[in-house]
Amino acid sequence: MRTSITIDESLLRRAQKVSRKKGYSEAIVTSLKDYIAMKERLEYLNELFSKKSPLTLKKIKRGRKKGRWS
Image (cartoon, rainbow, N blue to C red; front, side, top):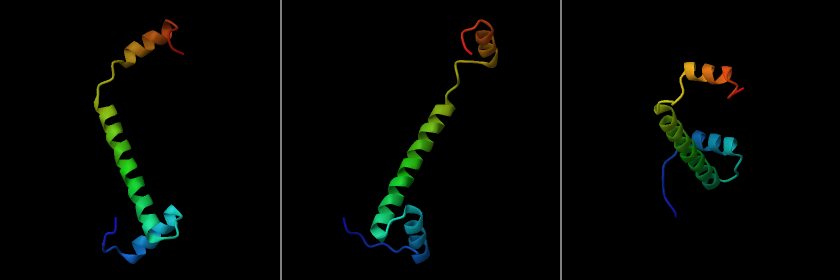
């Protein structure tokens, strides 16, 4: 899809350098894909760490003493 947008020239050059793409379009597409993947991973991690762990330090130590975990 063709779109007209205004982007700072130095920002485009940095995106090209970091993504190692020759054209502006390739650099922008790569940057957008990377940004979306990063945001999805962060969302997953936030969801993962917002849940309370079923294990406590006491339960872990007890399990280690009984030889259940190394």
